Image (spheres, rainbow, N blue to C red):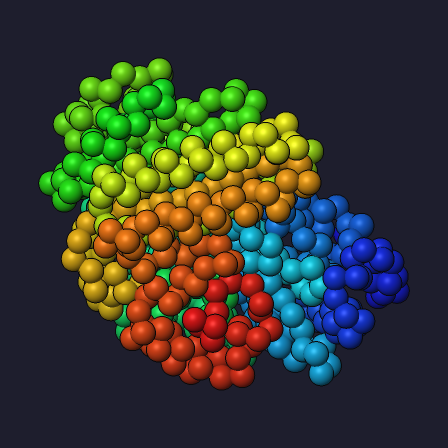
Length: 516
């Protein structure tokens, strides 16, 4: 529905007192001006306000309840030209305060303000969600508001895939700009290294392409540099033949932890011998069952049953297994339903926090990871007020073969992983809860867990400074972990393509190179 100017003004003035108290009067006035300027522009019919059904649908579609902020208005572009108008308008409106705005693709980050804003404008890219496949070039063109489940479903028709998210509802945009770990990483490198062209709306509103031949510095900087340069409105990725895999979710009793760790350490060091194999381990305590289970997705990126790469894990007694031949779409749809991957809804959604760190491949680190997990469960049980909460750790291989593939794209990336020549692993602590009274408890326990594991890893020489941006918390600084040379490169590229610093000062969400 398109509001009349009078209705738009009334909508802005009708904001409730709690909404207005989160910002100064000047900031609220500036946000009102910004929304009015957008409404008066050529994309006014794509601006929605509180009280509008499209506004409510956008706000409640974020993964975690704690990031479901309420912007002054939301603009929902449908093309790069629409995004260009929005950025030009927001860069120039708002008076002395300048417009504050957020950019949202899939909405999977768990810290408030990362991809949304309370007093300001959110550019919601969710209506830019198509995927087109060029059979001759073997290239998939994907718009930023797409979710990976829709991308995979579209590509199934052609029996191809692209390296993307491993749970269906994850958004394309943020995933690719943060690096992107996929089931195919050992074969083709991180997902960002498979992007061959970006279409980008710069702060000036100019629409440019970045690839191996044009805007080459920007092309490299976008491979891990997040939202520091502009808004990407199109990704072109090289496709991989064969959409069929073998795998599923294997569930184990928590008593098998030691066997899992022994098998994992060997698996990480042998991935380069069979790069088709992918493994994830989720240790999750759920308050409703009062027990911890291990859920382990195994995925083999070609249709071979029971590959030898999983032999050590296969010897461990299982509670259940869904291993089978399936498409990538099917497997990622299953994984989103697994423990810890419930997409929230306002009627039954949970708040969430996750943090991550990277360590050298080490059984000692893994044992300490689970020890800390159990300690935090014990701390939460007697004091948590909610009825449905979980404490989980996700452990994933991070072997050197993932980044040794990055030169395949001609420029590398800015992640800084090529400084390291050892196999590593990632640990992600992920806490979810249903009662706002527990906000401080679970946020504190999760951050304590990560800090304690970091301290231990440092004490035995197994800590690595790299932090995977897509799993990082607001309390972390993932860009700093890219190394000084890459941080400086990102800063120079940001200054060249955004000389007025629009994406540093007017877009508060995300990880800013100006703060690295």
